[in-house]
Amino acid sequence: FHYTEPVCSASRSAFLTGRYAFKSGLNTVAGLLENIGFNTDNVLFTEILGSTQGNFALNYNNMIVGKWHVGRNSASRSPINRGFNAGLYLPTNADYYFAKRTESVALLDLQFGPITNQAVKDARDAILSDGFLKISDTYGISTVNGNVYASPVEIDTSEYIEDVFVDEINAFIAAQNDSDKPFFAYYSLWTPHVPLASPPTARDNVPVDYSVCEGAYNVPSGDCFNDDRCLYCAQIHYASLGIEAIVEEVKDNANIDWSNTVFVVTSDNGPLRGNTVFGSPMPLRGKKGTVFEGGVRSPTFIFGGLVEAFTTNRCEYNEVVHISDWYHIFMSMIGVGSSHPDYNPDADHASSIWENIKCSCTATTRQERRVCKTNNPPREELMTMRMCADDGEGNSFLHSAAVIKDGYKLIVNGRQYSSNCPTLINAANSGFSYSSPSLVYATPNSGYYTTWYQGVRQRMGNTVFNRVFKSVPLESLAPQERNNPAYAPFQFDEYLLYNIADDKIEACALDLSVTAHSDKKDE
Image (cartoon, rainbow, N blue to C red; front, side, top):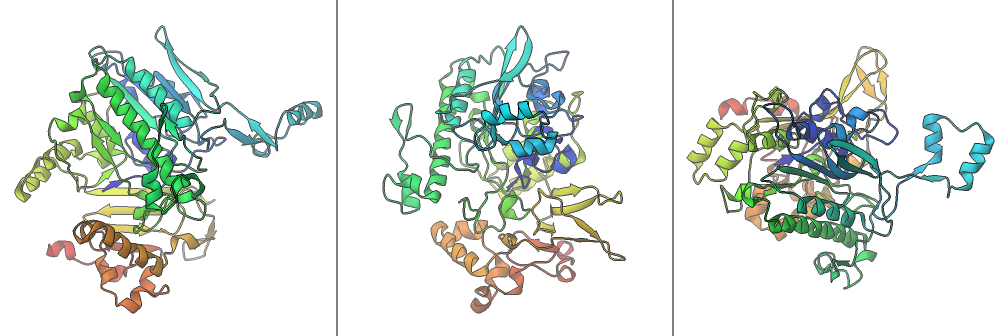
């Protein structure tokens, strides 16, 4: 499975730095006015790609399009100082598809202090609408005479933002000649972030067929945008058309070597779900912001001529990959090793994942796959956690954490939203207690799970379902127990430990005294 961090900024920081988020310096959401971001001592992989000096120069043209969102409060966190020499990006989480970002004046006053000069305040208020300040939060990157600049860019508010981004990427690709310089493009899509918005009904003057979404949600033809679930589907469908256009642009460029090109499509966290958003990881448990599988497991695809060079068949890679691994996979792809002065993988990223992927996807027998593991070990351990500091007494603490090792997963404080550090109460002689120990959304309803669980089984068929979602502990329950919303295994304590292969949907909280036994030794 492919894993991310529970929230957007944390995953992006892990991706760019090649470190677990809690080691990268940023393991929460980086807001517009917050003085946070990745640790600037880190070398991003784009800096290695874009290096132009010395024996280790790789001379990549690097482009960023879309959402940066890993810190904007210092020049050292700007893309132009981190290897990018082209792009069109938003520094933060400006939630829009058609309009420039707005920021609450009240929030700005809270951060910087209110305007005390009444004449200035009156002039400001006269040009505002409903207490919101229009700001240009989109920046273009350009290179002039070898110098890289970023400056605010005004975007036509009538244009759908993903169209703007795709056009920008395709213009960049059209200008590339990889016999001269290789290139890297980082497209950080806005889709499907809330608030949702209706995508265009046509792309390049060709009507877009949304019937696949209408059929999935039983919505009348032409009425998709009036149903929130169908609208969510439509936005993702439209985004896929943009990705398709980018792939075609690369294929059509005679100056780009397709056999040496690779695409990676992934996400930064699991979907939100609730009354106003309609993503769903079901029957996986959790959602964005939680360390349950539904919050951190992300479908991921890798394709392109570089992949076709070793396999033309569809391959499911069944080992563990974390979003921070892509840094090191990219380095393996282009032959950058530990001798490079700026490449210093830590002990958490010592696995030979790219070599293991290639070997595993060409192996035809179980023995060959065992040899792959021996010669090029895959990842065997994964951690994600929120480090909170401090509690007022100089102590930092773990919050909302998960560790995966040898097929088992340990969850600590899973009910907490990982982006927020809770207020602690100093409990004498008993460590620390959370002031808000329970969040309702994190407790699954067994009846709801059962409906989805059976529905997914019917759609997938038993063979695929059993491999991906079947929960042995859940199915071992008697029907009356499984359908009881109050049944104990569907509640959970501060600690859960279970076998992922048996309990893929994290349905059951197991007693530590029972599960922490010597199964592995018996194997």
